[in-house]
Image (cartoon, rainbow, N blue to C red; front, side):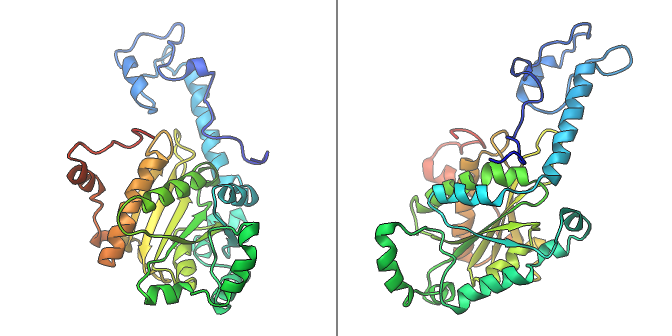
Length: 322
């Protein structure tokens, strides 16, 4: 990872000072202190006279700085594409019409539209009858694939033949840190979850988008004629979660889709909903969406109930076993 993007989530202080926190000298004992081991929320902060202890003020300032940095740090597209390739995926980089981060923050509408060059790139893939293939060629396969490309089916052909197509869009959103840190892991875990039992659903294409809003996936999915589009986007940073990733699933993507027509799985990060647990939930939603041909309010997330029915045991809580 390049110097422009530090490793996250960063430690707020010395590792020995991580929850459960050591009492700050001179701070009155608080009966809530023992609860701090169970949450990153700011509880039982103590006091120094009528104020917060200096250590807590500094922790808050550090958390606020990390949240601001998460909004403004750029996504390292080359590093993310390389990480995806290392996991066996190819990805195509695109941009929204927001030319700068300042414009992206001030004009949300531009983050929902592809710029002209990116749109032309994806249109060319469709017009040429080629796919934004998520699986890179090996040297041994290159010659055979070159002959097969002429006869390769487009996503539209696959959809007409009844084969489902899933397009994944990885975007920076309001926290490039989230996509940089967790997107490649989540995509790999999702591939495994989709391959595990039931009808196999292949990841048809992967696109990495900068200055991206959720609705940008609608235009991308429509251009690539995907059955479903899954947008992985950095969520608005919180003071204890600068690296939270959101996943938005939309059936039959097209420009103009409403938020009520999407399913969202949020707070994907090791300290929240672990990527492996999120992948299992998303795989269930993908299969149910393809079966029912809907997403959004018409598709309730009953993945935990399905796990209970299948295993005869309590569903795994987010983060367990990850």
